[in-house]
Length: 135
Image 1: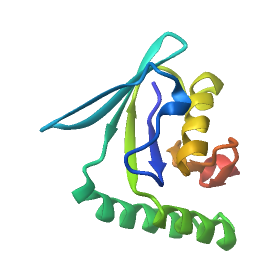
Image 2: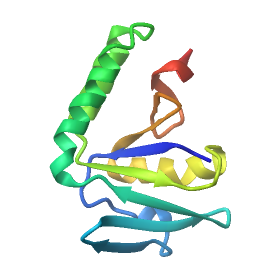
Image 3: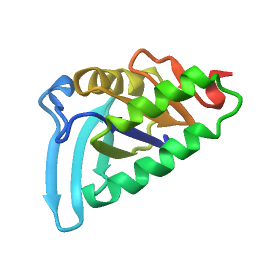
Image 4: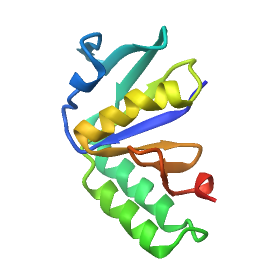
């Protein structure tokens, strides 16, 4: 099971890169997007906007304390985090592999952004900017 958060610069996100199968719902419990990857359902729950600033502050703090990563990479990560306008928590039983990363990569490319998984920040090309998976 993948434990992934998607951080995007656009809000609302443009899901056109994922094709026409994205289902959008919004109600008092929040905003949700659903689509299929390799026959498996993938659900994104959007972090409420009123929680975004505090969440990004904590995320930036996490990045700053990653002393095993070069200062330049940490500064780049914090700069990218400062541009985030939407956070999507991903729910799926699918493993975080190339089948799952491909649509996420497209989503990041179209919306600007990054992926956080395995305590690391991934860019749209699959490279790791900071975190233990970089080492």
